[in-house]
Amino acid sequence: MKKVIYPYTDQYIVGSKIVRDSLIQLGVEEMQISDTGIPIRPQFSQSMERVKTAKKHGLDPYMPTVLVMGGGCGMIGDGSSTIQEFDQLPQPVQFIIVCGHNEKLRMELSEKLKGSKHRIHLTGYIHYVHELMAVSDIMITKPGGVTTFEAIAMELPMLLCKPIPGQEQDNADFLVRSGVAIHAETSRDLTKRLSKLLTDAKLLQEMKTNTKRFHPKESAFASLEVIFGIVKMNNRVNGINICS
Image 1: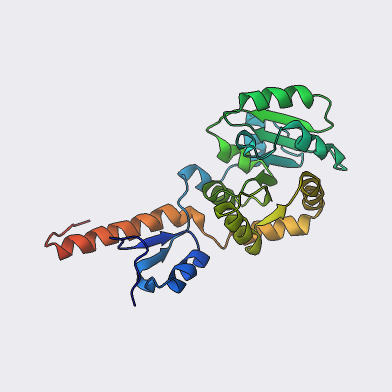
Image 2: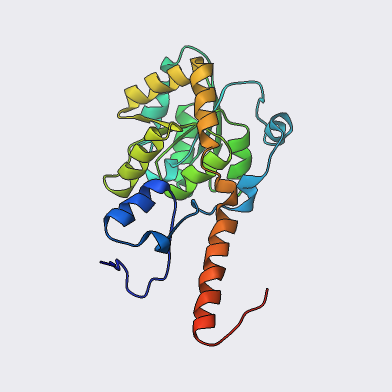
């Protein structure tokens, strides 16, 4: 029996095969579901030269680089405690920490991390995240849908921290099963797993390779094709033709 989760829905556009299969199990007809991936902005589909991009932002292109996203949303707690744990890493690392609109956190980190053995690059809210992803080896983040698919498009392995129960936890489980991310439970566990990633070139390369299964760079175009197809079909039913 055909089941409608949302009334008046002609087509479900989903971000993964897992979601597609879940809808089928709920009774949605397979022909009503299009697995296109999550659409991302065009900037994340472009190739960028690491050395040139790093120097543009005053970064060292040859140093192991970790991008920390979500600081402004509480991912790194009070800021200093989690980041200071990273001083336990055996080798110096270049950290890019995006604090978003949390200016208080950015000022706190700027003061408390002055003595860090790592190279720290702090930013507030920015519009060039794709460039920072291009020069990074690993991204530490909360498992939000759009940000993680942007990272996948940039072939950037992820270390996930503190997912909120529900959608974020489901996202984390999916990304870990897909081999593009690792999940850390605590600040200490985060440091331990980050150290492993930074010293295991084979694992990092495997995670980068796994990102290529998703094809997120084509997601926006695929979604538009589905939408235009539904519009054309509905207009034909109503006696209207669209030429394109």
